[in-house]
Amino acid sequence: MWPSTNGVIIQSNLGTYLKSKKMKTPYIFYTYTVNDKEYCSGRVALYITKPLTNKEADEVQERYPVDKEVIVKYHPSFHSFAVLETGHRQASIRAYLFLMLLLFFSISVMAIYKPDVILIFEAIRYFSE
Image 1 (cartoon, rainbow, N blue to C red):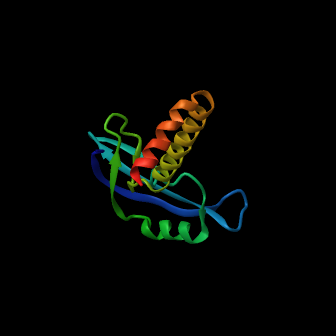
Image 2 (image 1 turned 180 degrees about the horizontal axis):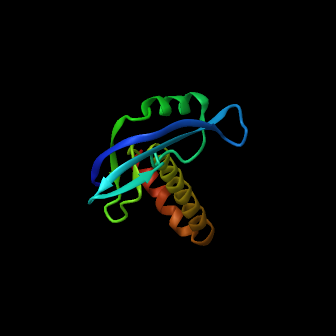
Image 3 (image 1 turned 90 degrees about the horizontal axis):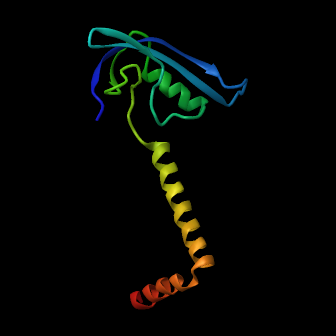
């Protein structure tokens, strides 16, 4: 669990992503203080890892207007690393897909190199019916 502190939005605007008319990037910068030292960050959330659609970017910018007081979550050891929103939207989906791919790959390798092991899966299916 990351500790939190108060912060203030100092910049809030939108930029285009590689001159794309359909994708925008919100530029949200905020300041916050930890142990009497002031920091500045521009990361809104860990789960925003790609450009957003115009609607999504507009929604992010509307949530964080200039001079708004916000709660900032910062890394316990690296105070300069902070976010405004916590969550696992894309990260959890990616992790789930990675684990499914790894499971499929593992079963495939076992089927090739150890065909006897696949008989276990057939036995499980037989007894579960």
